[in-house]
Amino acid sequence: MFHTVANFDRIGEENAFSVLARATELARQGRDIINLGIGQPDFKTPEHIVEAAVKALRDGEHGYTPATGILPLREAVAADVAKRSGAPVSPEQVVIVPGGKVTMFAAILMFGEPGADILYPDPGFPIYRSMIEFTGARPVPIPIREANAFAFSAEETLALITPQTRLIILNSPANPTGGVTPKAEIDKLVAGLANWPDVAILSDEIYGQMVYDGLAHTSLLSYPEIRDRVILLDGWSKTYAMTGWRMGYSVWPQPLVDKIRKLAVNCWSCVNAPAQWAGLAALTGPQDAVHAMVAEFDARRHVVVAETNKLPNVSCAVPKGAFYAFPNITATGWKSKPLASALLEEVGVATIGGPDFGIHGEGYIRLSYANSTENILKALARIGAFLEKNAKAA
Image (spheres, one colour):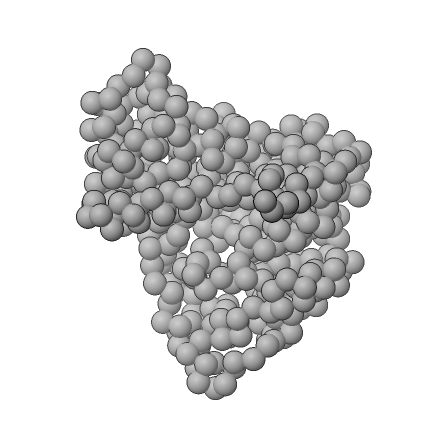
């Protein structure tokens, strides 16, 4: 029998991929499946981005690149982040990574060890907790509450910090809730963090360009007083419909740049070279497709909220960002994961149960509206019929 280290017994996963696999298998069997589970835009990557990758291949961009990414791309990322956050960003702080998860992996690996605490949003992206437990650090959930419009509470977050806290993970706009934390709340958090100068912050802003109702995204990098300890996570997957390209980027405080460079050398060497040129075209080319996608997500958001609130014993708060709704199903009498499983197996609608995003996710399911309006309406009609037929005592 193999003897693996204990860390690998603690590692979790992202159940959205398990649901995707099951949904794909059911579809292969001939079932009519509508996937509202996976967080993946249903648009194609814009053509000029694809062409940039094709050109790079034809031009012979077939070899290794610097571990942190090609300089033109890092310069473009630095310029784009500086423009959107108002923060001065050097290309030397930018690291191109094979997907947003890699930034989480690296940051948590740097700060997590037995005896350390790492704070993370709950419900939140499941890899946060998985990686924290993998390192042996203690995961400390920051409750994300519907009563607070699914924003984090500065007061509650600050109260969780102790001398053992090494890293705080924040996510706005948020997965799975669609919550956007108001600037006033972030101001309070930043002011309180002055009392904890040795605590680093991982700011997951992968959905930063997907905000609605006239809101503006507030980047943690926009605060000079904490800028020297913020690790920014962002990338191309959501904004440019490039999930399968596996392209992300991060901005690191200067003292951590060489550490992440060495990790890159040890782990992934560099990101796919032609994909990096595609990423450059995405940032420096026309942004019309981005604006069109966000406008379409906004329109679908209104449909999802209106139709979900018509479902029996279901209520849905209005998401302010990303492309997720997180309806409350407590009054149906169903637990979240059994309901999500039944919806997939019995009526062919893939959703994700709230507990897959943390202990505070019970009573909710996640719906991704990164699918067509036609499919969303069809899926919600099926869910409504299922709930009518399978009512339980709450």
